[in-house]
Length: 464
Ligand code: CAA
Image (cartoon, rainbow, N blue to C red; front, top):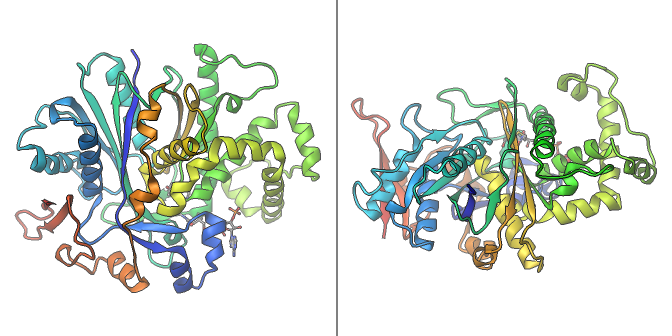
């Protein structure tokens, strides 16, 4: 049985901090954010918003757009790494909010859980729900998988320039209009690591930035190796001599903690794939310098990062590699469109990959490319750490959905925060009743109880 993504919707909070204002306040060169990281604006949540609200607002949007009733939904999964409860799953809060609109008990039949594995858990949730449909258990109902996060780092830390917030919801069924997942090729890698983690009770993560960048690339590459084997053994793709698996992906969407991480990761994957092929000789001639090798043959992340001479040379080599015409063609045709939304919104953790997918659909369609039958590869990464590589094919009905996508219009009603306002919000100094915006037709947080009996209980309302 077939299964995949029928429709996709996003909810992005309407406050943002501009890279220019942020850089000035932190004594940084704004070009480091804009060009070095690919961050122009970062979406910030108001004091009456939390990740459950972002998720519920996204779900309401997709249900209303598709005129779905709760009876049409068999499963609702929420994937997040911004959970605020150690036991109660975020999807129960989301269902509670949706029932304020659709009526008490209307989602009673609907199964689901909250999933956690840093930024990769949404991909596991998609995979599980796809298999629920493939197994014939859906009985004609759809699944909603919503990925929702607030990427928040300590003030003054190097992660602070890669924040953001928002939710992406995907409607899954057996006759998807957007993308059908390729069967039997989903591949994963996993390793116990401490590149980025958030111990109990801590609102912001502990991050080893450069270590996490490198681990991301290594783990995705491992998952890609396994994907390659599955693709060949399942007969999905026939690889000719001199080809790489990336030649068989028309589009590649990567996890985007910041927009330029997609560039970095693609360059890493392409370089490692091409190195084994006859074309590498030609590329090396165009680059004009030798490919550097780390001093320490163990090649651990620590030893590589500590090898300053290698890092400098490798940086130079990568820069030259990404300027070669052959690489530029791959970058422009397969990845570039997926990076646009991230520059305007920032990091969405679990949702970043799927915001990139949506961005790619919208901006490739605007270019006039016929997307029908194109294969999309996904490189998902979650710190801690696990990667997942999978793919799908764009369906003939995609235009029905993609023609109405307009990211700029969805973001037009945003308010640029001053640095003082941003810091008030960042330090949680505003209560929900002192929110910056008065939203209409949205769920908002009313209060969080503090008394001993009901500590942590959240009250939400739908603002008419
Ligand atoms: N003008 C132009 N470019 C500049 C510049 C300037 N003045 N100054 C620096 N740059 C460039 C650098 O050359 C670099 O480019 P390359 O990557 O091509 O080398 C880029 O800007 C970033 O500079 P640094 O590497 O020096 O930046 P940093 O070390 O200060 O911080 C970071 C970058 C490590 C990503 C940090 O923001 C961070 O810790 N972020 C959070 C962790 C993270 O996002 N990790 C990603 C992988 S883990 C993951 O994906 C899970 C998740 O969602 C968090």
